[in-house]
Amino acid sequence: MIHTWAWIGWLISGLVALSITRNPVYLFLILLCIASVVWTQERHLSSESSQTQNLLPFSPFKFALVIITLSALFNAFISHFGETVLFSLPEWLPYLGGPITLEALTFGAINGLVLSGIFGAFTVLNLALPIRSLIRLIPRAYYPLAVITSIAITFIPNATRQFQHIREAQAIRGHRVHGLRGWLPLIMPLLVGGLERALGLAEAMTARGFASSEGSNQTSRTRLGMVFGLLILLGGWLLRLIEGWQFLGIGLMILGITLIAAILWSIGRSVPRTNYNREAWRFPDFLVLIGSMVVITAYLLPIPWIDQSTLYYNPYPILSLPGFDPLMGAATMGLLIPLFIIKLK
Amino acid sequence: MTKRFSTSRLLSFLTYGVTTSMGLLLLIYPFLFPAITQKSTLGQARLIEMPLLLTLLLALCLVVLLYEVQGQAVDTKLIALLGILVAINSALRFMEVAIPGPAGFSPIFFLIILTGYIFGGRFGFLLGVLTIFVSAIVTGGVGPWLPSQMFAAGWVGISAQLCRPLVNILDGDGKISEIIVLAIFGAIWGLGYGVIMNLWTWPFIAGPTDQYWQAGISWVETLQRYGAYYLITSLAWDFIRATGNFLLILLLGAPTLIALRRFKRRFTFTYRSSNSQQSKLDQTGDAS
Image 1 (tube, each protein chain N blue to C red):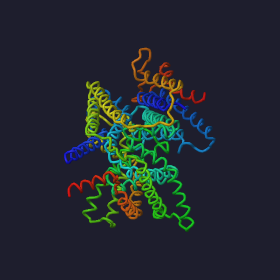
Image 2: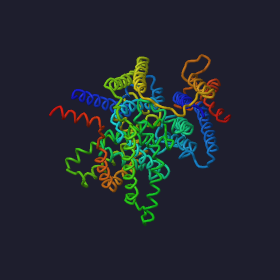
Image 3: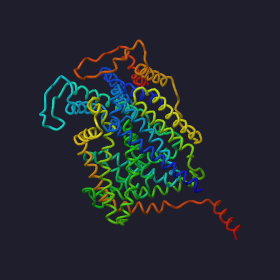
Image 4: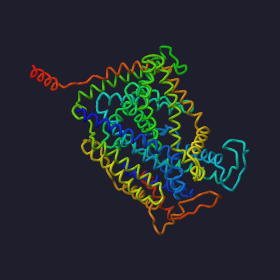
């Protein structure tokens, strides 16, 4: 419904915001936006497929609750910094002994908020994008891997079904799974059957002329270029860690990434790809992208009328109230645009 | 031809070396650069951005390494074989998500190790990387942790070849000693996988900057702190994974190796077009 690249833009803006701020107020706002989109997307999908089954293996909301609680408790028991002492554990307890402070608890909870936000943002992507869109994101230069991925995804339901058949057949013969050894009569037919199918598939692919004449798309120049790009990237990253060299470091990192991307693009050009169901870029996608750009601009670029100092917050050494700029809060709402589009549809 | 082959080998070696070293460097970053980050006033900023930056850099390492490794996968037989094995392994991971085993137990490493051992390191690497990728797509597990997981699983597969010299020394081909070597290798990776995955999150979750990257803190002390963190949070979890790998390979390894060896022979035939046969006959005629 929303274009894949619009979702990618939304994800990047969410990750940028989450990685820059440690202010719990903004983090709550971001998390609220992401949770609303997750919830709306889940409801939309379940109404579309008329199914009541869970669309995800576990609830992202429960996951967030567990992560925030665990992270807060873990940091409180491991880190003993801060001035507001809640209680103390005996000093003889290794690593745990010492004062348990409100500041450490808050710091841990903030970490948990960030982690939950990252998980939530990716949950939206997993819910929103069909598998074919994710496979389509694999660059053309990696067409053998894209083919392997397509085969694997096509065969997973088959493998699961075959496993059920084998289990039923073995159960009829009186086999019961007792311990790991009991898995042998189940795993081996699955594996051998799969290998036989692979042989048949390979013959069918060869008969249809797949990879009959073309060799690898690798040349010495592209391989060397990729490694060179990675080395430039590494150099840039290392320079960035040294004060005074940050800008040169960032420049080198951008150069390295550009070189790798350019090589992949040039290789990809020689690989033909047919799209039977090309995604159309529509006005709502444009809106999602604008919302994402607003978030990235507000969090990243120095805008005079937005107080970006409120993004930084440190609960140590004593807990204080975090700052809040309404304009920054309003910009964060750019993450909510997909929700309105899904609702309107 | 020989020159081209040796250049290719050299480039392969270079790519594997650079990507693996860089991947390791990124993961053990907190141990190597405490002094640099402490001298920088941007320490806190580094801490905040580090997980996402690490994800990006690891993903790029993986992109370069995959480009190198996939050169082998232009053969239809290997593509089909990898596709099916990835499907089987992903189905096993899917079952693991649906019916969680005890603690960190995961059935996927069993097949990654054994195929890496039989079909070669590149094959094992691709099986590890693609199993994690495909199962993440299917189970909704795409996230910033994915590149680290893919890298670690790929390393499991590629390093399975390290068992070969030891098995040769023991003259253990097809014997119980081969299974024991592989089972111990699986157990080591059961713990190693957890150690690697923790390295991705540790600097992020651990706490305030001055607690972990203090000025003057030695790498030994950083290692001690990581050790304590690992002991408290992960050892029990990873121990179950290690035991699971060990037992799976010990109990199911022998028949699986027999089946994989049999199919390896069946997969190593080559198709020849009638044109090449004709040119061969022509060449024979010219020679006579």
